[in-house]
Length: 355
Image (cartoon, rainbow, N blue to C red):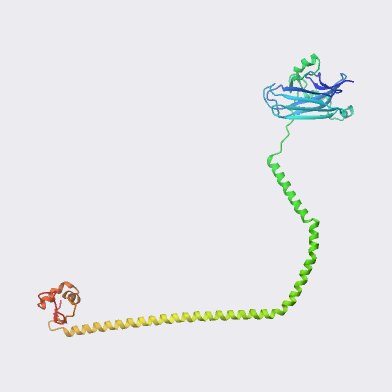
């Protein structure tokens, strides 16, 4: 019973790629049939003795390199091992997008096929096996031992996938960051909880219990010992407080005495200054009165004042003294018949006429 693994052509003809009974590996290059095509779907089938091909699985390659129809290259590799495990991989050489499939042909029987939620008729119709709307062409074949008729059909169109698979929605980056932060926070919180509940922590507490008991007992002895020292400490504190109070009082008294002495000295200085000023004023008044009296006594009948010249006197100064202006010194010289006003003799008398 000969069986082959392959794909279907656009007209529904089965295109064998490798024999199920032989251990082999084959590759096939496919290309797009439409401009800017974003994905392709490749369906694998198994045919036994020319019977109706049985569906095996599908390869859906998304985000392929876009371009004009016929430019992208999708490399399809199919391999069958000793345990009848079929491995298939489709890779877009431009973008690197790929899809792989691994199926055990031993477990692929009619019972498992009947349990699937689709039938081959709907698959063929939905996959679009028509020549006008295919996903890709077979670009080239690599030394496949097939009939010339099948090789001529290799240039025909394959698998039309009218219903393009929906692109998987990618999770937003901000949501991923929030999830990572929450996970880290939860992990740290869990570690903290575990460290608090670790058994060795309880052992440490139990081991330290006797030390605490000893520490509690020791202060009791200290309390008994300190009770006898309380009066001494109180007396010392009272003595220190009393000494401090006395020192403060003495300092206060000294400050008050100093302030009082300063005030008294200030008052005494003010009194002495006042007394001195009064005496000076009195002396000046007496001297003035004496001068006036003397002036009156020295005044003759003509109203002239008799004056005794002293050493250093000048007619200029005498005119300033009696006339309040020095420019009348010639009047004094003319009245006393002094030829040279700059030459007067001390000890002599002159008359100063009225102004």
